[in-house]
Length: 155
Length: 358
Image (tube, rainbow over all chains, first blue to last red):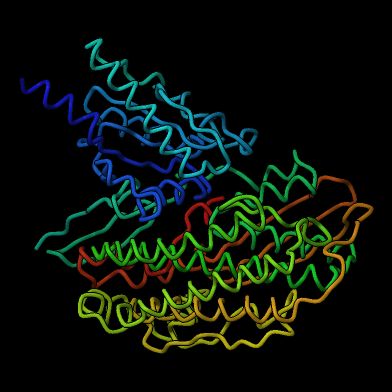
């Protein structure tokens, strides 16, 4: 019974944590713009919180670099299962325009498993909301399968 | 009371960007703040060896998404100086229009985040609601909301039709009305004053000695604005730097609030005086020599050093951004403050970490 309530609320009111992982701020301000009156995702129960231990969805913007690799992995490990990761923007997908820079590792999926990729430079708020909706469909699949999510790939 | 070291960041609820501070705390009072960097460092300047000088425009735009247009403008100004190209007058005015639109959206964004830092969430929502009008203007005139990418060496790539200009003026009237409706909240509200008045005081002498830039400097009473250099079309436009004398977080908020109104006025002036003609000139050849170029960003003075050697790749590109200049004043204003005021004070310098670390 309790499990059902938890699973239902995870889908109906997902809590997000946002981490800027070396982005140019373009995608960050678009992610924040989703919360504001024009797009207002809070009316769907989506809540942006700062604490990874309370979060179901991790939103990552920007490329991974050699220093924040560890931070990103720590945030991912602190989140309770089941959890999904959404990579936002061209940089989060592959490194984008910074791909060849010396301090850039590459896309977010080099460090943690990514469920949804949202392209764009920067991704528009509509695209980000669409990505979150798609991510929730995946979350519900994971709940049905009942399998724990695999842990981070990089050391 | 013994000392405790509190780590602040890199992932923190009020910070949109990762910065780490080691705060040495006695009771609730901060004694020392040591910043640590590198979480957003990508190594953009080195990319100048792999991308040619035209392609680098797209790269410097992504130094910082919030003031992307002004970064690209500064870079193009430097190259135009090296290649001895004169931008047509209409191109210069269009650059002013887009750069001031960026300033408005950056300041509105900051005013919202600042209010959010002391828990005034409804003001955050109000400012970001107004900001969407500016984003609509960007999208309608340049095709993208945040990174407008209008600059090229020799001018701007897009033009404004008279009907678009009228529509922009109409939207700006709405923006001005809505921003002015929030004026009493930012300047007279009990909550705002309680959290910001007298917090993080930076005296005129300290601001000068520590090399503060932009609104942080002007809030301490020094009237320095790089737009006084009259680059682009600023020689024809009337404006005075906005100055406050208190030097606290409240004054920094007021400076940015007044600059928003001022920028709306500058866009109006630029549209009213927009001359006819081409928006760009074709450039030939390769840049050679070195140049230092300065412009005023929403956060302060931005400096570009470009060294070119006559090939299509630049020898060296050095970017010195305003937040980099504002970090020493931040470290100086934190000691003596309570731990709860730290997020407000960090935001009061308008930190742009992706600018600082590039």
